[in-house]
Length: 117
Length: 170
Image (cartoon, rainbow over the protein chains, first blue to last red):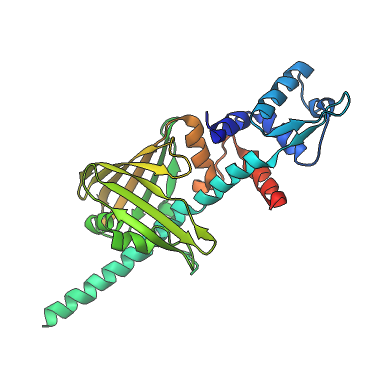
């Protein structure tokens, strides 16, 4: 799987997104991350492993509590992808509509002149 | 140039007929042959396709309009060039139907097959663009990119988190 697919697979889960959202505010221990969820520590650890493999978080080596930190690079790639697509189709079609009006006005003017000749 | 209050804006719709598809429809106040032409000839495509604002242009707009022919568009913005969209035409039935493949340069492994249908509707033209993606993941990603405003998809938080982080990194 390419990086973007791995990132999206990791993000395709509400618990993992909630974990990331919390980590966006600063580093947290596994215990702290588990708090809001009604799930076992091993279940939370499993989610963290998926995020870690996708490069979305890193685990600290410090002592026992190994704080989790978010890694912005894969998310930045996602953001860049989304920014690129942003606006595109809706605005494109609005622009095409305006252009079609322009074309038709030209066609009419042109046709009018031809008839007057 | 700020585009606001354009005719038929409200007819723009995005739906997801299946897990791997996105369908866009829109009505245009123009006869079908003209809409077809405006979407398939470079001199026309250059005037609307990438022109989302001032300083935008389409420096590369190649269309070899025949089955098996290739197409390639590059949009230029004041911030720089957007990676190319490119693909190949598979089926052309003027002025009714076009089937083509579409790739976005950074993701060559995720091509989509795009079918565009042009229908006459009381002197107007409704176009329906159906894109079939390689997987639901890719489809959802494209969808989440803002093609459909306020789409209540599973990636709700992603964009917020991503933007926040992107800003922090910048």
